[in-house]
Image (cartoon, rainbow, N blue to C red):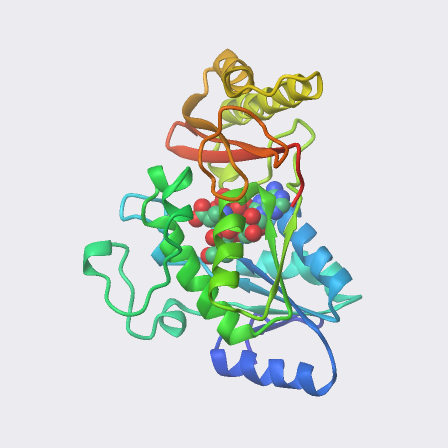
Amino acid sequence: MSEYSTEYVTVFHTVGEVRAWRSKQQQQGNTVGFVPTMGALHAGHLALATAAARACSSVILSIFVNPAQFAPHEDLAQYPRTLRSDIEKLTPLAQTTHCVVFAPSVAEMYPRGITTDRTQQRGTFVEVLGLSEMLEGGSRPHFFRGVATVVSKLFLIVMPEMAFFGQKDVQQCCVLRAMVGDMHFPIKLEVVPTVRGEDGLALSSRNVYLTEEQRKRAPAFYRGMCKARELFDSGVVGRDALITAVAAEAASEGLEIEYIRLSDPDTLEEVDSVTSAGAILSGAWRMGTTRLIDNTLIGFEF
Ligand SMILES: Nc1ncnc2c1ncn2[C@@H]1O[C@H](COP(=O)(O)OP(=O)(O)OP(=O)(O)O)[C@@H](O)[C@H]1O
Ligand SMILES: CC(C)(CO)[C@@H](O)C(=O)[O-]
Ligand code: BAL
């Protein structure tokens, strides 16, 4: 029994423990909803867990900071690790729905080891070619291979009926949806809308890196996206006008924009205007050493 387990939340650290729990759920006729996370839980994660609890009889949340999705120069070492308080945050949900946590070690998930240096990596990896190179893939070429690999492992360990991901990481949702289809994973993937602070900033575990001053300026990107949506609602469909609306608001707070794109929801290719299929308006910006992302769906829903 893990030292982290509480009266309401059982914590597993090994694949064997999860498999035994999964078989029990099957025997009892319980459906399993799965919420993969990297921990440092906030209300966005809890919205995913709540959606899982609504749709399934049992919920399992994984907490694992996955080295394979970090580049050597990224924040793997600093990434917040707060397991005990994460478990506390799950208690209210766990009082009404059977909810367990899988918090494996790196060795448990990567028995043959893992390095962030891609040229030195050995073993089995999953790649979703095409979608992974777009948008975030431009700045983080290693990222979606790491995500697709760890999510495949987690899916094969947990074998859930449904899995829940946040719209905040919209490209991740597109990549994983393609992976589930390509690999015939018998899992229904649900996308949960982005949970925001009162000032509109998308909740993100990395927000803790922001200084007070940066935190005040950060919502400008969201305000820009709202302006772009207003333009779209008034009949503007052109890429340049929509992107300029976001860029202008972001510039007013001096955000260092990495990219802002209008993309086709299926291929993620850049589009000139919003068509009947809708479009994803998304971007990334830097505040000091912190990198944040956000997006809004225009003219369609997942
Ligand atoms: N604000 C949010 N609203 C809804 N879902 C979210 C939100 N933030 C994160 N998620 C989702 O929670 C899941 C786990 O994400 P993760 O643990 O990386 O948290 P995060 O806040 O996105 O952290 P990071 O700062 O590393 O991006 C992902 O599916 C992610 O999209
Ligand atoms: C899906 C995920 C848990 C895989 O490590 C991660 O990319 C995240 O937290 O969004
Ligand atoms: N939520 C995405 C995880 C990452 O940026 O590593």
